[in-house]
Image (cartoon, rainbow, N blue to C red; front, side):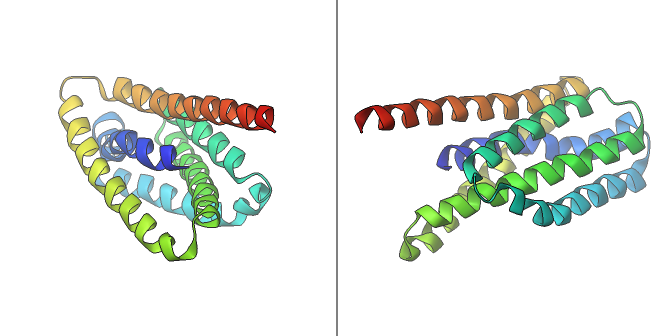
Length: 181
C-alpha cells in the first residue's frame, strides 16, 4: 500500500501533462479538447465509487489489478487516433484509477491505528502532490524531446511495472508469512 502511494506519483505527472498535449497537439481540439478529456476523467472518477463494492473482499488485489489496467489503458491511449475514443479511454483510465485508489486507501486506513491515520494520510498526500509536481515538470521537459505518444507509452508502462513489482513483493511476502506459520 505504501509502495503504491510512494511510487505512482512519479508516473502520474506524465499523464497529467499529456492530457493537454494530446488535446491540443495530437487531436487539434484546443481548449474544447482539454475540457472533453477532463470531463471524461471526472465522469470516470464519479463512476468509480459505484464499482468499488465489487472489490470489497480483496482490496489489495483490486487495487493492483486496477493499477495494471490503468497502465494498459494509458499505453493503448498513446496509439489512439480518434478523439472520442481517447475520451472513452480517459473515462476508463479514471474509473480504474479511482477504484484502485479507493481500494488501497481503504486498506491503508483499515491497517493504520486511528490516531495515526490523519498524520499518515497527510504525509502521503504531501509526498504525492510534491512528487506529482516534479513529475509534471519532468514530463513537460521530456515532451519537448520525446514524441508525446512515446512518452504516454512510457508512462503507461511505468504503471504496469509498478503493479507487477508490488504484486511480486506481496506474493513473496505472503508466501514467507505462510511458510513461517
